[in-house]
Length: 397
Ligand code: ADP
Image 1 (tube, rainbow, N blue to C red):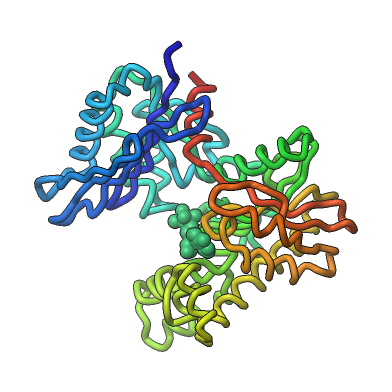
Image 2 (cartoon, protein in one colour):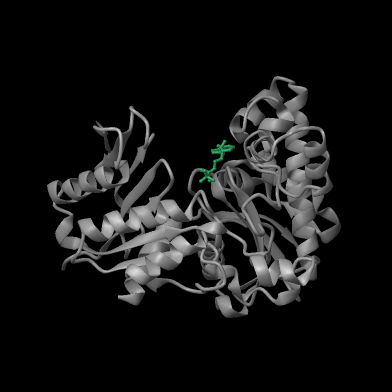
């Protein structure tokens, strides 16, 4: 029997992540990354059958196109091309227009490009990657899967900002939410683990990676999430500040900071990096804490306190809860961070399952705690956004 592989592409402004996913198992048959586009040392590296390879992309421009051309060579050389039945593109922002995965054609690419006002760093880059891929694989059906789509079920009370109406009608300012593919995937897997139909299951899904967000999921649908108009709001992240008093922006600008400097400070110099003064990487924070680094200790405390506050606040969005789901690089691997969050939720009845918490690491799913009071568990579910992109592309085929 032949395989059904999907080529998954995530095109960024200076990078292009790719993977050939087996749509039945979710395994990556080939995976890689092109990076430093626009610079002299643009390059690509990839992994195939456990071996790692790299390649220097020549020339000083059109790196997205050159990377996709190399990708065509690779899937042919590795004899994967006969099994690739579709291409799925990850798209950060679908605005209010895209509530589900769609098949790509030039008009959809133009729509994605038009939404770049809302996500300037991402959507323009996605359109470049889509056009390069459509030119390189003209015979393959291609699909766009949106990070925002899962959250389009949020009620108006969750997505409406407490601001003048014209900011919404004229500029589209509202909560959109991101990480939708991840929250979607882990909630489906969590329901399976609990042997419940997802349409009758409610969760608080906690995606903790370099970017981090929480999502309240009621009967399988997103009803609130912590990222908002941009992926800057909500939780503290690797380098992003999360929720912040908007008055601070005016204050800094009055002090002579430019818009760029404020943006850079809140996006690139805040979060774990800003608070610890050390690193944006959670592993580095945990190691430094053990050596007694005060900044790292504070960063750990601010981070876990804020995650726990968000989880508790989402009890308002739900009628019942089956589980808290931890996912993302930190959620899947960091025992002390999960422990501290669960300890902070003791008024909701949560206690840690120490053995479970120790076991659920490095790709293993499991139960890490529970609340008898709420009838809920805390669980770890490793995310797999590429798998969702592959599955949804196949479903639409
Ligand atoms: P991204 O949002 O870029 O996809 P990931 O989901 O891969 O990021 O998460 C990256 C984060 O996960 C980093 O902060 C990293 O330190 C953290 N992480 C990975 N492994 C561990 C671990 N064993 N313990 C603690 N944190 C970890």
